[in-house]
Length: 77
Image 1 (cartoon, rainbow, N blue to C red):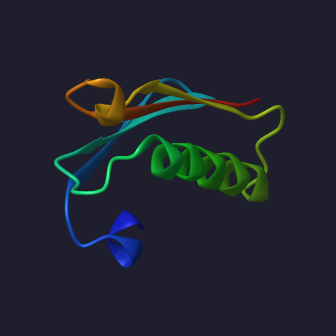
Image 2 (tube, one colour):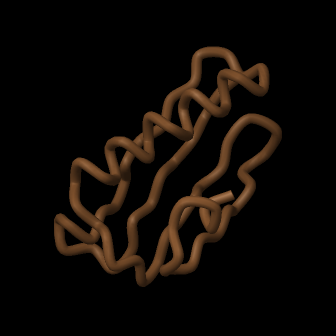
């Protein structure tokens, strides 16, 4: 899905049970805090549209803050 909107960087998803997981983006040219916060909102709404309730998406790591990757921890019920 990410490749539809971005032409660079590698994305991965690590499942954490039936109601959560971690999405990571490595090597993207764009890595500003506003871009990552917008992406977190995109994930949150996407999970809601697929039936997730009480969705929480946390920007746990961000290259704009000096981290090596941008990382989004997602939880829902």
